Length: 327
Image 1: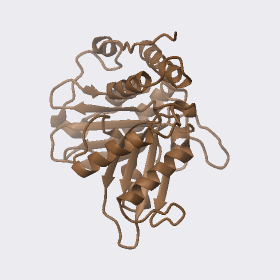
Image 2: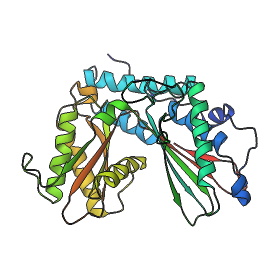
Image 3: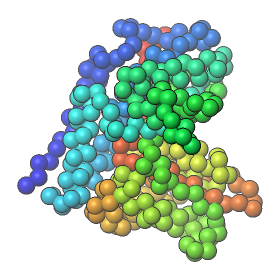
Image 4: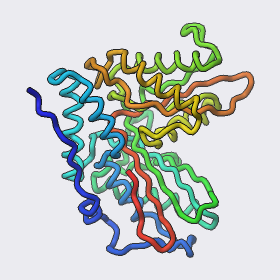
């Protein structure tokens, strides 16, 4: 009989003891102009590359326990749990592909976005030197790799989205988006005659099912789907990625969309694709959907597919307090 691996993450105290931050480090938000994000962001990357969020772990375990013991699906999900334990215990990447790195920074008035961008970029360079991140940023035509994870032409990688808000704290979220799952993302333009999909929720449903069927196991299933309904070709894809920051098991603020997510998740798990495409009952871990504006002449459905190794986390810097990390 196959051994049922139990998730056994190191304690928060042990994680904190390995921090790159000096003991007692605090953010001085009274002096935003001189706030240096480089070290706390480095620590965020150290944690997210090796420590899977608890909600994702619980979803993987739930999926494994729904599979027949000893089946390929059970063993695959069981190995994922084993991998989670090893990566956390050894502080090594959960996957050799540490992905494209995407940040969302929310901050009060007074923070220099130019300075913050430079600090975040410096943190990514250092995290790459320490092998927490694989150098994944190459020149498109030549394939040349600088080894730093920096965009060699402009400053588009790492991708950094800024938003000023009224709260006093600074919040930095990060996502490590693997190349395999990025390849199976999709964008649909409705109506779609080939799918028989119109400009309604039934049409959106058909798009999502089509994307999952086409992905099979190539996105390293079971996947997590971010679905933006509307927007344009750019804002829709941006929103679909941001939606994946939401924790699995948390309700959608829109009750109708929440019901849609839950029903479709159950239906997708009847497709038989299973983990890594090996068959089984666990094809997706969850769906995060949101309705957006659109131009009257356009109707897009943008789908971002996140692999089972959903590496994401949020750093919060509050006034005169130590940084908090939510994974």
